[in-house]
Amino acid sequence: MMDKNTNPTTPPVCSYEGSDYQDSFWETGTRRYEDAVEAIALQRLLNKPGKLMLELGAGAGRNTPRYADWQRVVLLDYSRTQLVQARERLGDSQRYIYVAADIYKLPFVAGLFDGATMIRTLHHMADPKLALQNVRSVLAENAVFILEFANKRNIKAITRWLLGKQKWNPFNHEQVEFVELNFDFHPKAIRALLKETGFKLEKQLSVSFFRANWFKNHISHDRLVTMDSALQSTGAWAQITPSVFSRTIAIGSSSKPEGNDFFRCPICAHPLPEASSSQTCPGCGHAWEYRDGIYEFRIQPES
Ligand SMILES: [Zn+2]
Image (spheres, rainbow, N blue to C red):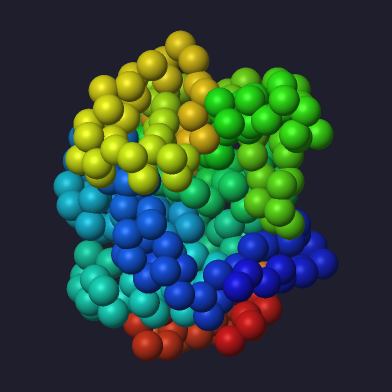
């Protein structure tokens, strides 16, 4: 299902190119509980309207309708086919900008966005520090950034480790790659990383307490969602769930975009306007394609 793209200058990227992830994972019911509790967490953390939101790892747009208070949303994903599905779902409108690009080579001028979210995406980042540095650079000062990460110190991992069924220690701060390009992180390591890359942590929620199949098989969906909702705020003092949501603020100075500058060539960093058409970079001459309503800013696109 997932391929690894190998780019010589950046860490490998996990791609959902050609996958029916949206349908098989979220819409046929097996992950309905996770979807519902994530919606509650997002609503609690993203409590102010804004102008321009960057949705990193937007996929097929599962969360995008939850940003209704934002004037415009850039949906960014490495997989073009996921964006095609998002566009089919959300439609073509001035509100949505679809961009196929690599998080390690973000194609935007510095300081462009006043908000960003990254949900179930850091999970695939072999170099989370480089990813967060890139995100910080395209945010304005005081922009809100919602980060979700997969927590290695979760109750299931702790139990398995204590029973000797799992080799890796959930309490040490190293990230663990449990499947190729799927990483779980320690909450303390993420907090240190956020601080180091220019984000101030404001609020943390623990999410998905009842992800195990036993709960889904024995307790009603509505009851599980209600119980998760009641427990999420315990994330302020302990995080033992497989998923943790954080609201952070971008601190330190940011450059301000000039004139019509919007995109930035991922090869030579020359600024480019939001053109709704293909454009040739005046800096390096690379032709950046705009096709079927999707901007192509991957340096070596697969399709
Ligand atoms: Zn260029």
